[in-house]
Length: 106
Image (cartoon, rainbow, N blue to C red; front, top):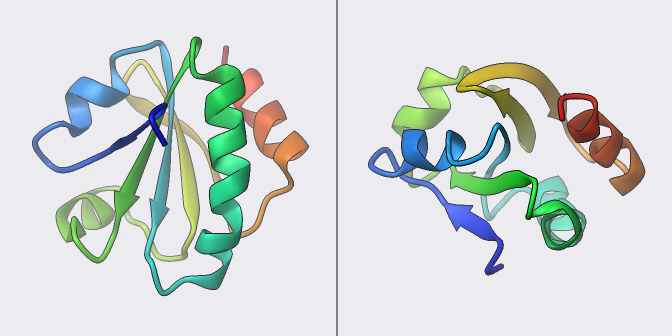
């Protein structure tokens, strides 16, 4: 997970604005689909990490960010461009679909 930042309220803004596009995985350890999406997210981070900032928010530990971004379903993938959420994907997403959603904002 070297290419995926673990976010807190302290490093969130800095991380999501480190590149033009960021994708944030809002997840929790008890969420089955979240766990199933980890290898997909890690593979995309490995493939696209030079162009896109990949990050995760454990919603059990960083409740403030989950509230701020109105996360109601896990996992939620927020695609952020220039600091603003431009797209959201919810639940289990096939790797090619998540990649296409990210590429649409590059």
